[in-house]
Image 1 (cartoon, rainbow, N blue to C red):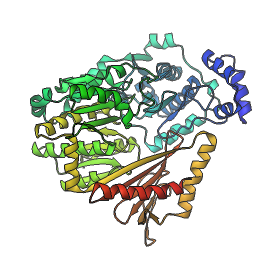
Image 2 (image 1 turned 180 degrees about the vertical axis):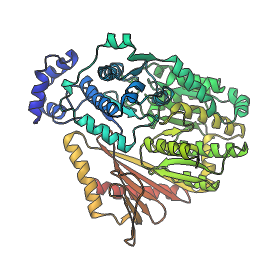
Image 3 (image 1 turned 135 degrees about the vertical axis):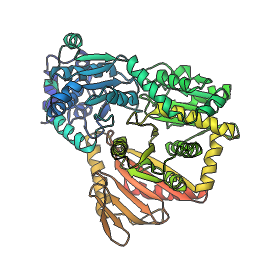
Image 4 (image 1 turned 30 degrees about the vertical axis):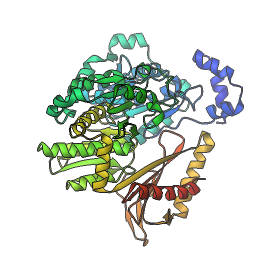
Length: 573
């Protein structure tokens, strides 16, 4: 169907939401109309994410209904028990998040599927927890993570509390795409569904259960009891969901001196104090740093709007604050967990940590230093959740920690997605540990480099907006695959992993099959152990480029990265 026909379909739909109707009438730019009506929001393994607005290529109540209709059909295909178990639904502080959550519940209710809807905004990890706690068949999280304010999104979780694995996600995608016209999806009556209990409002009871599990995140309660009043923390939820449970968890662990950035404490979908609520950006810490200098804070912590990612700035010996990367935060946490558990006699010989293929190799060196295994999975926390489930079923390994370079960490598997609330408590504890030893976290990180070698990682995101952008991304990935790459930054490629074709190719031409699920990603290992990876985003119109270098000094690894970056730029033009 041409975009003009789709546009006419929406223009003539008598029951069109009034707000969307007014927006549609106000659009005069044909290119804007073509983009909004010339395609559909991509629904992939990570759900969907897009700009709020009118049309099938925007986030609105109709695209939410379409996605949920697909989920309803998937659940119905699994039998009556799945429908009875129902779906847990949570949402963050973004515009229309509460409305989208209820629209999803109304679609499910129309099909006789029960839903558990949070009374107010909650972090993503508590939705993951709620799915498991309530023994639901699935979960929905309305969030656009750390995107700017004009975005919202829709993430789907399986019965294990993790984002749906590829097979289930593929089936869900087929059901979603089978809904040709989102305007035709029917919904149930809200009053009737609430009255019958088909929509159940949840809140404090589930929160208390989550906080009870949070007690297990603290590794050394005696250390925390001794040092808690000496650790000075600044915390910002960046206008999102992390405020209530973040403070509760820190206080429950015993930390007393927590200074909240009040200007960023109130939930607000406009995110008025930042250009984008992304805790990997130094700029979002400006207010936290001003407060930190006033109160002499040891660490500045910020959660993204749905509180699944955590960023940090740490005090240095010079008295300023250093922004940590997601890899550096993960390494600090992993090193502390290994050291603390070994000291307490709580480090089983079958312990493993799990990371994504684009995360730091320094973590591998840390695990090897303790004689333990580091497991790599594809990008996407659902793959870490799959490993946790596997370990629980087989008993073959003890899960220590999972992480991705994109500021996502999980310590205890009572949740099965990134959990910034857990990370808050662990970072506070390890800050106490190093402060007792007379070190800042910047000092601690430097000691890790000195012991295991210097590592540097960089992520580059290149935007390809609109329908034409999607075609360009496909063209670039196909070109790299077809033409191949022999070197980056003057370093020879010794291994090339193509996760779409499932093949690992060595420099001498020898090939062996990969054991990973199929994914549109490429990773090149270089002769010195450095690496480069390419991956289209699963939720945004961009290609993500990753690189990691290793060497004997900070200067060496940064210089290597500069050379590699230059070559990457020529491949993606």
